[in-house]
Amino acid sequence: AQSVTQLGSHVSVSEGALVLLRCNYSSSVPPYLFWYVQYPNQGLQLLLKYTTGATLVKGINGFEAEFKKSETSFHLTKPSAHMSDAAEYFCAAGYNTDKLIFGTGTRLQVFP
Amino acid sequence: GAVVSQHPSWVICKSGTSVKIECRSLDFQATTMFWYRQFPKQSLMLMATSNEGSKATYEQGVEKDKFLINHASLTLSTLTVTSAHPEDSSFYICSAFSSRDNSPLHFGNGTRLTVT
Picture 1: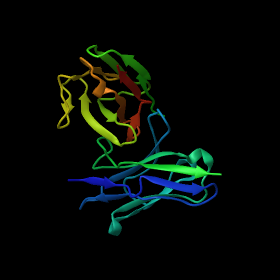
Picture 2: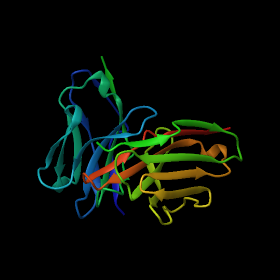
Picture 3: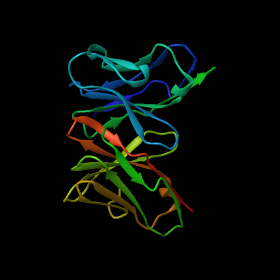
Picture 4: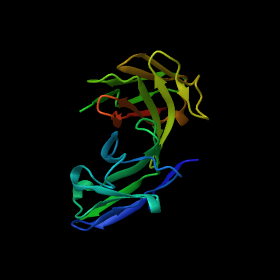
């Protein structure tokens, strides 16, 4: 069965530090991959997506992710964290762009 | 961009009553909408896939008689939680797929249901 694993349910960084949120998927066929952000009591907002083509994907708010087929990974990074980045982040995978399998989420805390 | 509106944003109801949640695609037609449930500090669990003009497809373990889904038009899907119980209290999120921009799911802002 396909699954998405997010290592680390909580990640804490200082403002200005590098953000790294990990995501691995299990599949013999690379699916479509997504990162979403969720603020408290709100829906999900798409940060970025990988479908085909360039493996380094740039998204909104300075985030980017790199698809590495050999590692079945799609880690999310941001060079410098802002306080406003504090939120829940979900990695998701699908074999098309509609039905998605979500990881368990990573809560990012940013300290001043 | 594609906008999905979900209403209400929160609702409190008594045990045994039914609650209807609406999910609308405001500026695009959505032949397929999805309903997710999210428990506190957990991920999203897909409950069902709602297809316009046909019966919804429920995921394993989801009671279709308890969670009634209707997708009567290309812009509206509803989820009705029937005979609600406290264990139904959760955050429900809908999403819709826009073929117009070949984007993945556009999500509503969710509905916080509390059953007392």
